[in-house]
Image 1 (cartoon, rainbow, N blue to C red):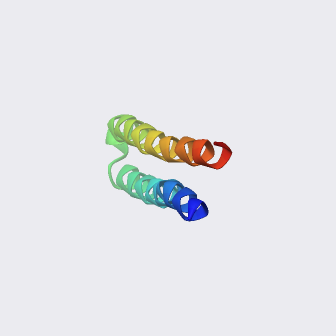
Image 2 (cartoon, rainbow, N blue to C red):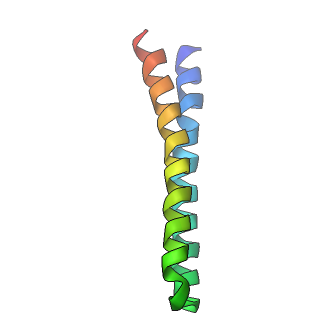
Length: 69
């Protein structure tokens, strides 16, 4: 039962990885269509990736805490 809970905590990490790839793909497509807006697109992309990565790290830390306690 404990390992199932750990897997559930790691699920956000997997989903975040997939969504970060999708967001990066869309940003590259947007820059290809409008090169003059690349600075704004890049800054919004970095902010979104940072927030997404934070939720992934939270899930990973909770899984580690559950594993070693």
